[in-house]
Length: 417
Image 1 (cartoon, rainbow, N blue to C red):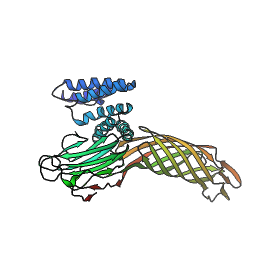
Image 2 (image 1 turned 90 degrees about the vertical axis):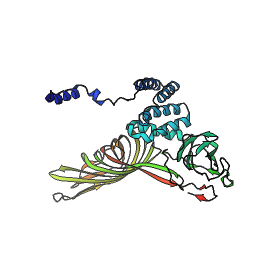
Image 3 (image 1 turned 120 degrees about the horizontal axis):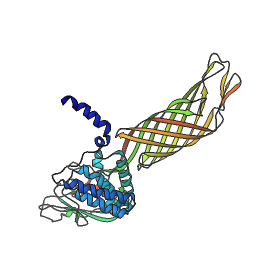
Image 4 (image 1 turned 120 degrees about the vertical axis):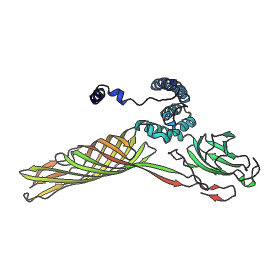
C-alpha cells in the first residue's frame, strides 16, 4: 500500500483540481461559525451582484459579527466588501474605517481584492477626515467628542466626519490632555497627547485646547506607532513603477521591428498615471541582395486610467528613423526621417508580488509624417498612416512618500514635530 500512495495522489491531482485549489476551511471549536459566516457572506455576494447595497451591507455586517472569533486576517475580505457597500451607500466614515482595516492583512487577500479595496479607500477618504493620535502613557483612555475610540493603544488612526472635533485623553492619577481640531473633508491631522502626573482628571493649565489646521489626507491609511516623544507625520504618497518591456512593432520601420521600452510611471490616487517612455526599435530586410538595417529611437508620453488590473492610455510621441550604411549599397538614406505618433493603449498589469508585476499592452498609433527609405535612388519603403506595437514585460512598482510634518504643541507649550 505504501507504493500506491504516490500514484493515488497524482490521480487525485489530475481529476480533482478544484478540491486541491480550494482554500482551507476556517476551523474553530464551534464548528457552526464557519458555515454561518459563509452563509451570510454568500447572501451578501448575491445582493452585491444585484446592486442591492443595503441588503449586501447588512449581510456582510452580520457575517463580520459572526466571524468575531476568527483570526483578523480571515475577516479582512468581509470587512473590505462591507466597506465597498457602505461607500455605495455614501456612508463614507464607516466605509473608510472598514476598508482601512484590511490593509494590514493584505497578505490574506488576492491582488484583485487589494486593488478594489485600495481604490475604494481612496474614494471614501475624499469625504472624511483622518486623525492620527499618539498618546503617552499608552494606557490612557482617548475620547473624540466625548466618545471612547477603542481599547488603549499608543497610536490610533480614526476617521471622523468633516468639521470641528475635540480629542481628549484621561487616566486616573494624571492630568487630562485635550486638543481641538478643525478638519475639512479629505484632510488629515496628527495629535500627540501627553498626560502629566497629577490629580485624577484635573486638567493641567498647560493642557488648554489647541486648534490645529489639518493638512492633506494620506491615501495610505496605515498609521505607525511612535516612540515616546515623537509625533506621527502626514504626507502624500505617489505610486508608480519602472518597467522594461520587449516590443514588436509593425509600421514604424520596414518589415516588423523588435526592440524594447523603458519607462517610469507616476500614479496618483491609484487611478491615474503619467508615463515617460523611451523606445528603441530595429529591423532588417534585404533589397537586391543587400541588407537594409534601420534604427528608430522614440520618446513617448502617456496618460493612463487604471482599473483593477486593466488600464487605458492616451499616447503621444515622436522619433527619428535612420538607416545603417552597407558596403554593398552605393547610397542609402531616409527622407523626412522625423515623425510623430498619437494613439491608444489598452493593457494589463498583474502584480504577482509586491515588488514585481507582469505588464502587457497593445498599441494602435496614427503616424504623422512621411519617413521613407531610399536605396540607390529608389524608394523601397514608406511609413504607413497606422502602426501597431505589442509589448509584454516586467514592471518594478514603487511607493514614495513626501512628508509634510505637522507641528503639534506639547502639554508644556513646546513645539514638537
